[in-house]
Image (cartoon, rainbow, N blue to C red; front, top):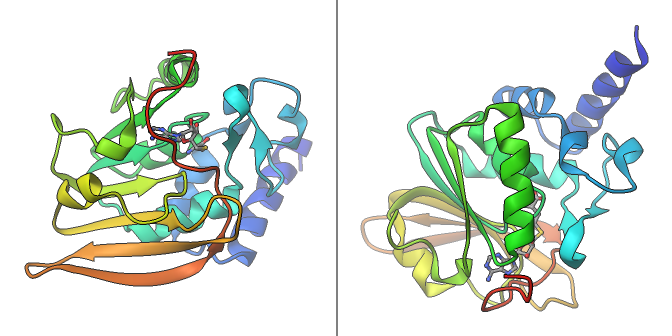
Length: 214
Ligand code: SAH
């Protein structure tokens, strides 16, 4: 087996052993090369199950957390998805394999610009990335079948709840930024919202307004 193939096998094995069992999600994560989203010093660690630093003081999430969030979102090929927190673009690229259309927003213009370059290089034509404060959602493109937030707020932002379709699912971390947060799944029904708690996680905070580089 080539070192490349072996690394990929270990990557998938690590995902499975941490609870990512949905074959469509595993296949999407096998297809999208995480190394392409890590521009700086850590590309040799791209296939390890750890978060890594990216530009603007942010982080690319741990692969198993990307896998578990994607799995919890239960995306179908008809779905229009909103991601708040583009970061490196990796999570959006994984979603693009499963959804019809992905909108992703980040408050840092530089991150959006760099992520777009990677999407273009990979030919991921169903992703649209914007610089915006995602705590307001994306009213022009709403409503969404699925919403994923990859930065932690104290509570699910009201505009995001409002932009979720009936039957839609939102997955997000909630809690104080300097403490362990809880990953929750919100499902919108005809009559309201159902919440279930998935696991403890740790994300950078959801910050209001645009980044200083924007
Ligand atoms: N999903 C990313 C990781 C995200 S890190 C990946 O796959 O690499 C969290 C991101 O959320 C950061 O890039 C940060 O800039 C962004 N963010 C924080 N608050 C935000 C807000 N209000 N609106 C949009 N993006 C926000």
